[in-house]
Length: 226
Ligand SMILES: Nc1ncnc2c1ncn2[C@@H]1O[C@H](COP(=O)(O)OP(=O)(O)OP(=O)(O)O)[C@@H](O)[C@H]1O
Image (tube, rainbow, N blue to C red; front, side, top):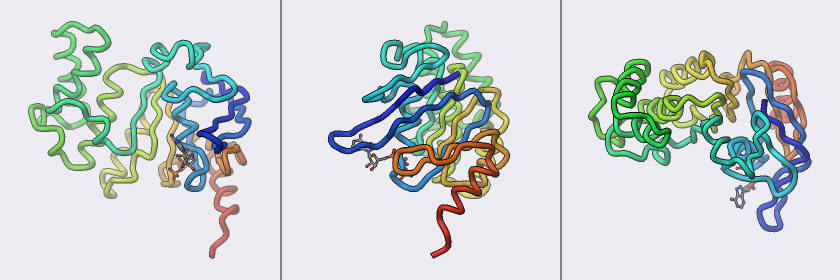
C-alpha cells in the first residue's frame, strides 16, 4: 500500500501539487492529465526520487523521506527515455548492474541475468552495446533492468511515448501482465483501458479518480473538441 497524505509540492514559488490525499492499493493504476498538471512530479514522490514539500508519502509504512533506500528497493521506476536509465556498456552488464547493488553473488547474478534476457527476448543481444539497440529494445531492457531487482511496485512514466505500434503493444502487454503492482503515467489512453483505477490530475489536484472507463470519460469530457 502506498499512502499519500496531505501532499503539496512547490518548486521555488511555483506550486505543482495541491493537497493530494490518496491511498494506492490496486494492482493497476493509471495517472493521466494535461501537460504540466503534475503527473511526473506525483509519481516521483512514490519512490522517494522526490520528497514532498508538505505532507507525507509512505510505502508499506516506510516514510519516503526517512527510509528512501528501502523505499527504492520496493518501488522500481521506469523513465520515459530509456537512454537515461541504461548505465552500462552491454545489455548483460546493464542487467547485472542493479543486481550487484543488491548484494547477489556472481553466480546468482549470471543466472538471473540469463533468465531475464530470455524472458524479454533479448538473449541474442547479451553482449551487444546497449546504446545500439532499437528504441523498443532499449525500453524493454530498461524495464527488465528494473524488474530484475525484484521490486514489489513498478512506476512507469510514459513508457510507450517513444515506441512504434508493435513495441507499444509489446510494452502494453508486459505492463498488463506483470505480477507487480504498477502505476503508469501515460497520455496513451488505450494503454490504460481496463485498469482498476485511473487518477486524473489537473493543475496539481486530483479531479477524477475511479475505474479506467469512468476516469477516461471524465478526462475526455474536460477537453471538448476545439
Ligand atoms: N525540478 C523542477 N523544478 C522546477 N519546476 C519543475 C520541476 N519539475 C517539474 N516542474 C514543473 O512542475 C510542473 C508539473 O510538471 P510535471 O512534469 O509534473 O507535469 P506532467 O503532468 O508530468 O506533464 P507532462 O504531461 O507534460 O509530462 C510543470 O510546470 C514543470 O515545469
